[in-house]
Length: 311
Image (cartoon, rainbow, N blue to C red; front, side):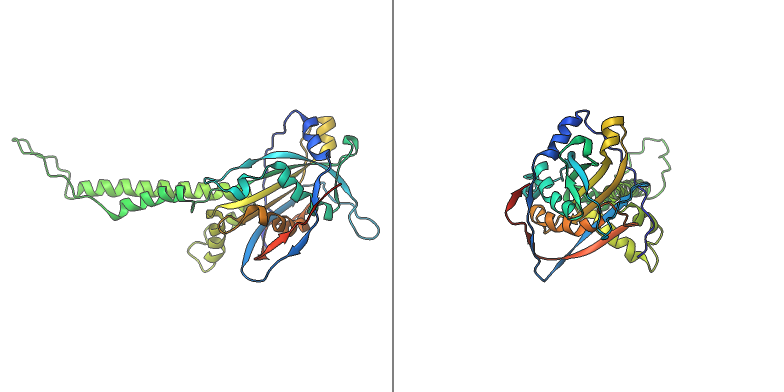
């Protein structure tokens, strides 16, 4: 699969209290020390879409490694799913930041100490999407489908009091119900398509979904169906959006340098336990461009993050 470069622009509003946002990234973080123990067995797919915006290129040292860049974290916000889920609902921003900090450090992104020497402000968003297969949305779709299955008989005609009955034609009531049923189905399908596209834009599936439009009735429909299956399941996600800190601090300009979107199916997974694996898998793309969506398989198992260490 060779997808084209995704085109996604997300407008982000930062709190005017930049100083308070900066403090979140400056205090010593409790960084987990990894001891990855991935067991063999069933596998899950982690989807990653990363983009480096024009003008952002990492500097390399003579040995080929990246030159360190400093950053501060800021809370972007959480999107709650339609149902309670303690594996993610119980986690707050600092819980997420602690896990994200380790793979960032592995890529030479270093927690900042002084504002004047800070390169990036990394906004962190996380949450759960609501897909069309979610029980609440599925109920609406099923209700529309049920109108196709059962059509009540037409009511008896009114008594004739010497006036000619209205010439509605045989089965006119059934035709009216069929028309209403079709309209309900079309409305439900539009709602489903709208939900799919909303999730596609949030998770970084939008370019691939657009590319497969029109393939529904062809031999290549499997590619689209696979994307739709992902989008219509509820999915955990984390989004990192890295802004030029100096431009924001000194010039009040929101200059987005890179973004990475990571997601994993909610069903059968524990967000808190899966988060280290998700971030480790995505870390190779931080600050770079995937030229579309990457869907990697991760082994079923767990990652032990070990004891936290203050830096």
